[in-house]
Image (cartoon, rainbow, N blue to C red; front, side):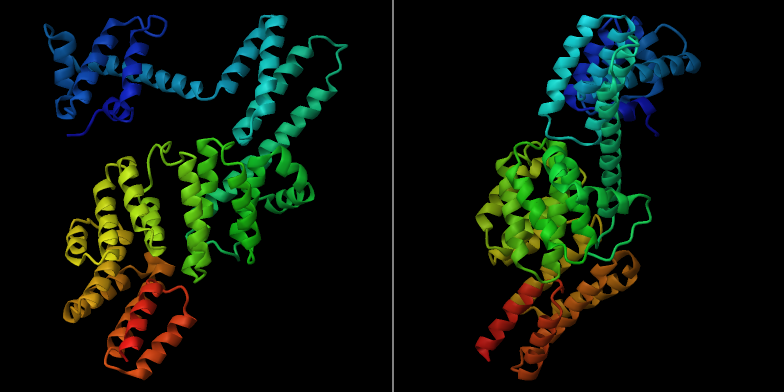
Length: 480
């Protein structure tokens, strides 16, 4: 049975938001229809009890008008009115999160009513907020545009008043809004590309002009427009061949100012830093693993993960992988145990099972690791390939070579069927399968095979599981 549109909308609310909706619906300022209050109570009762199956048109009508014959037209009218009220509620709570926007609306209202003293009081209050704000993103500049426009409209009532300064500030705010919004757009586009280290050409207007302007005014941008500066570094970090300087500059700038960033802007710099670092690790630059781990630790001290609404599953797993590669087993166990509740319900159990398998494998608890891997549903290719990679390593370490060979073959078929989807992952995993076969051949005291494998691993720094392959090869050298 298809859910009602209003049911889907209400399911998107958190428990506190659903309770606030009740206060909103009961407020006579927003609603004078008692049927809508009763309708809210129906939905609240069934949603709180996770009893969505009982939310049918017939049950709603029975709740509202038990003594009357079912009338679909009237019910749809009531549901439509209730949906509009809920949408107004969402608009109100969204506006609450942007107090500057609210105050701009207030300024406009005060100006229209010629309440000049009240206008000046609110204006001074807003000027202080603008001056103190570190997170000057495009929404900040949009509010500054409205703020300066309100002053020009109000001041323009006096034809003798000099408004040159207001027009200059308005022009600057429009320019900075353009810079910030365009950079945000560019970087959002880049973040959708998997491999973004160098040699990228974006066919979007004004990117070259924006970069030139920023670089000609870099000191001022860094001092007065920290979010634009951060976005500029992200853009350069992902688009120029020798980009380490921009990573280091961004890394230093963020860590120095980490307590000034709000959660939203911190996420804007966190993921580019982490993705860049992991791309570098994938290309064989292991020093970036330590830098990534430093970012994790610093951001945790800032309560970044605690303030996340939802922990992205791939980020959660990647944190575990980085920590385990640095032998921080206790830290990984503590971190993942502390934050797994923030994973979305869709990925929570599979992410936890995969991480537990990785931890158990690191601790050489093979049966436990295999048990955890058996609980992983393959939500996408990442879960499948990371699970199979781990299982291959376990089979090799336990001398289960027949099972290993069978798993290599089935994984190779999986990769070939998904070659176009996997992009660079395809080559990296195919190399891993090739090298694990070489590793199997080199076990028979075959010095030539050992030499070939070592040369291959030194040449191909970005192969999946390279550190593990080198570790296993070193044990053969000891035995040889």
